[in-house]
Image 1 (cartoon, rainbow, N blue to C red):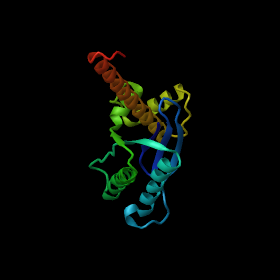
Image 2: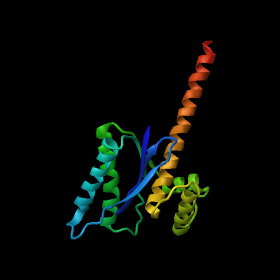
Image 3: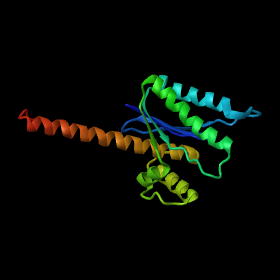
Image 4: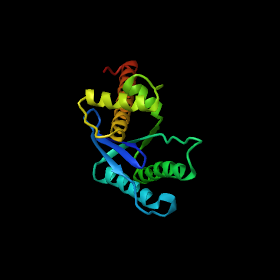
Length: 178
């Protein structure tokens, strides 16, 4: 099963790889010059990314970092953040691909052991953990996507183990053996 993880932003971190394997990391720069309001070009670029992840990379599951919408964000930033997420969700739904939206604190706690760090401290800790695993993210966007990918893989593997255990226990209970 191929898992894709996206740290959606103007510089979107991407991690893609097989469940239990190693992620391929890259950054998609969604900056555009002289674009009209409402980020139409960026939203189309993220749709293209979602399409490529599913059609070309074979992604069968997508994890997205939950959008952070602060009260100090301006309307344009909020629109972009929610718009990127909505576009990936709609493209995945169109193709029947499940999506998990995970808060950044949950990702950090899983990957570094703490979800209560300040932003810069968290970014440094995630980058260091990536490097400790032999992964080579080129920026914090890729590192965040890699941490998210790792959590998505862990959740999927955990659910498969639980499902297998339930099936085995049910067979034993019914006297069918393992």
